Image (tube, rainbow, N blue to C red; front, side):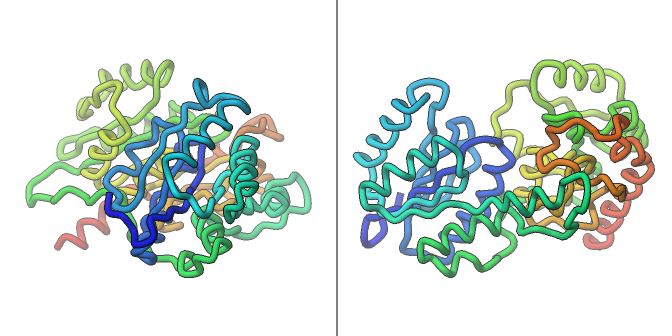
Amino acid sequence: MKSSPTGTKTLVIRFSALGDVALLVPVVKEFLNQYPDEELVLLSNKQYADLFADINRLEFIGADLGGKHKGIIGIVKLFKALRKQFNIISVADMHGVLRTHLLRFLFKVARKKTALIDKGRFEKFALTRKGSKIFRPLPHTTERYRQVFAELGFNRAIMNHTGATLVSSSKKTSVRHIKIGFAPFAKHVAKMYPLDMFKTVVSHFDKEGYQLYFFCGGGAEKRIVSDWVNYFKHVVPIENGLSIGQELAIMTTLDVMVSMDSANMHLASLCNIPVVSVWGATHPFAGFYGYNQDISNAVQVNLPCRPCSVFGNKSCWRDDYACMNQIAPQMIIDKIESILLRNEVTQL
């Protein structure tokens, strides 16, 4: 890793969900472009290392939050290890949870400059509450990340420089299949399009000239996808147990990704491919839309109860999940086809 003139570094902390960590990728790349003499140490869950591979002047440190870095004692050990290994002069807390509060406090006691993300809790509550909603777009999560850097004195970091993708898309040949990725799953049921209706969408594109790819997790998701691979005729099977980096390599070859409000939306966005995202209980206004994605590619229905949740982890007030069930498969099909048409026109 190339050293900066001062040898000092800023520690960036973000644990938790893959999608939230993925949104940090373009921000740190933009930061390093704006500040060519700065170096970053990025602390996150160890399984997310592939997201930050080959970023010059950034060193990734993977925390073992379920093992040696578990609990208060584990966080103290992590703090001491970071102090010993790096000359850290400032800390950007992009998460704001108990373990990062403790880490930030320890660095503050050590007289390091620190800054904490503003999650906009009240704004998000006002957007998602049952009555008297304040329905307006809130700052995107990447904007909130940039603001943390600005509070540390890196004011150029708040500038938005689009196109900071993770990997370059593969070269397209003149004769090829149209490749569509499908990611039908999400952590919470309120963010998942009904699988039978999703299957109808996939069936429309299960024909000559197309290659279909399914992205999923383990357990029940894997079993469902295994059945679908056998059911549809034009599926390209993806090996089990691929790393994040290997999945990203596949995504770069796609023409379009179809996803829920989930990590796969963010991963595909990093690969600079258009994403048709399907939204139910959550809403792009909460600030978690795919980085640099066209908002017109979001598929959703307008209901007075939407959005009812920031993360999709609440039960449906209506008990019928109308926000998903009222989205007709043809709405998603039309959106996919409009993107494929635009791609075709662009390549002429």
